[in-house]
Image (cartoon, rainbow, N blue to C red; front, side, top):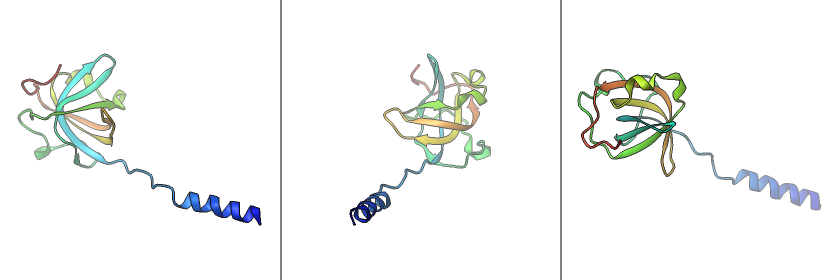
Amino acid sequence: MIRAVFTTILLTAWMIQAPTKKVEIVSVTGCLREQGTNWMLVAATEPVPSLANQAQGKDIPTTPPAGKGTFRLIGTSEFNLPAMKDRTVVIRGLLIKDKVSRINMTSAVEAVASCAPGAPK
């Protein structure tokens, strides 16, 4: 009897656990900066839902946006970020919300050969 009650309690607790959080694929445009060993996207736009594929055509701005966001980029080893340093880029990837949100990159493309005036160093 006690075993059946205990099993019921465990099953009930397991069934009412909070659902796992869904990680969104987003697109963010901003200034690519190297800060120590981290790659950061500063003066960045708000994340918008996207596909993981590389941005093309109308998704690539012709002038640097004046965003206010900051994102730490992870999963960077697959990309040649030093070639895009201090330039405006479009980053797509999985958004991980936190104090300093992170983007696990799936694509990166240079948009403009400069950053927005006043973009943090």
